[in-house]
Image (cartoon, rainbow, N blue to C red; front, side):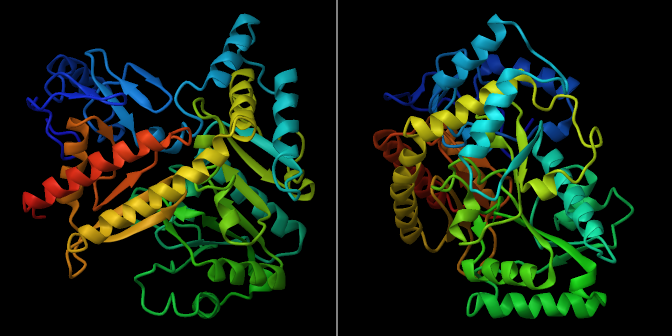
Length: 463
């Protein structure tokens, strides 16, 4: 059976042995197949689709299986382990909680909860005065949606209008999927909130979007209001940005976002950023929105917030965060001692152990090298997009036709050679090593990647 287009038939591949990579068995490992088949039998297929390897241990930038193989990780488990796999600070913090022991408190207080929230607020931009802790990113987005609408009600808005953007992704719960704009993911709903609206995304390949992004925003905003018969001062209470589009690491032009912030001030609505993939150092700054020169009202974070455990959060002003009454917005596992310990240790590691600075420095090498690879294969690579230690390479022919099978083949070759990439299943490959990666490991991984692209291109794979 294939795994997202990648065969599970074991193939004898050349042996690999470096400091960061080791391949000593056929890939996929024959002994791993019974476990994969067990998952096929008992787990929803929606959970499948990544590379057919079985993780057994992960430390810093390395992932190992039980059969002696080692991979250099360029996924960070999909932008979670920003501080490295098994970061020592986080491991020790979790041990301290286990040794107490105190695994769960619901909404009762604990010292570690107070410690984390105080450190979080003291080390994030000044407009963020309070936080709400949750377990999953989609929960945080739902919280943002609720807060924007409650704020609108308190400020006399006629409707709870919220604007998202074409192609953005915010999570798998109903409100989050409505805020996103991927119609194929919404066919199960049978309903769409008439007060959730979408504007076109300013893709760099879209005619008109890049020439004057601020004017383009104004034109698209005006068209939306005209088409939907909206009075923005009465019908719009919020706008949410995915800081970059995850599938392709596509950022907005800063002028586009700055124009949005000006309109928000003019028409009195809130600006929120979904920082699930971009937060906590991934793009070279603590938060990805900081590349745009604006300060949002609300921030929804997850993934890299804990670098391991399921932790998400919303940051905002006291005025907005205290809108829900006592007990009206909580979550069973939010703020439990384990995730608070992980969250505090993670942020301390990023800010006090030089990880944030290292990620920014390595990000410059990373982006430069990937653009060199693009230039070499410009007949098969249309775009390299991203900032810091996140990037996407978009495989296209000279006419712009997506080359999804080529992208899948590159992922497969890298897996066979000891490098893990984010296999999207479409024509993009996402690359995002932990922020702890050193220059030697980074350059080795990129060399493996470049050779895999060269070999896959030489195979003349077609879609």
